[in-house]
Image (cartoon, rainbow, N blue to C red; front, top):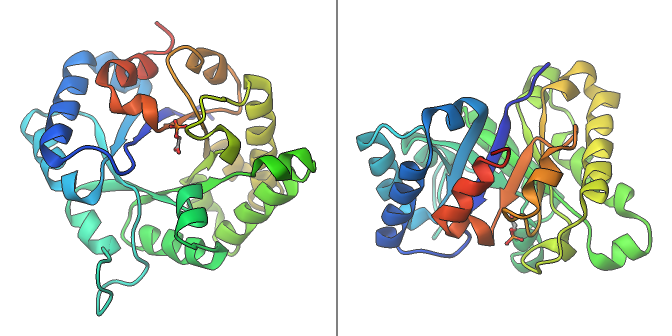
Length: 255
Ligand code: PGA
């Protein structure tokens, strides 16, 4: 079954809401209807920009999808500083990144937290983008598959086939994030293919529908080589997504 490519911009902690408005408007100008037919285009601004970006998307009838970078797993209550899945869904958010390595490493999110967030996102009808990835030490110790397979299992274990088929998984080797050091296309494809086979071993044909992204220093110069790989269905892009010209070039990687 054909999987639609997804180019997802993870803006991380960048851009005020005023800058975000300009960024999404510029991106909208640079894309044609045929681009959206071919690729799902997603931007994930910080929480403070979600409402502003949503307003631009609606007012300008843009087909850019809106995503969030994080969420809390509870539906509401005394959780100072947190944002619930329902709040995001009401804002037109359709994708939520869970388990990004920066959240795992800098904010102490473990597999249990990632699994809880993933289920909370699904509960509001949004699509989780589940991130997995190994450190440089783990790659050198040749335990990449155990690490990413374990993270995948911890996040997805217990879900049914229909749900897993609708998920997005992002393979993001930690040594390639923000370093300019991309995994070469073969290395990235091997890990993405491994993840897909892990899905297949438990959820069968769902593996043909689950989209698997690569993330880590994706840029307009390396995107075509990555996208040419059968098991890579798109990119989760940090730095390059902040520049609308580069983001548009990523979406139009085949041009
Ligand atoms: P990068 O970030 O493209 O800046 O390496 C990717 C990510 O962290 O999702």
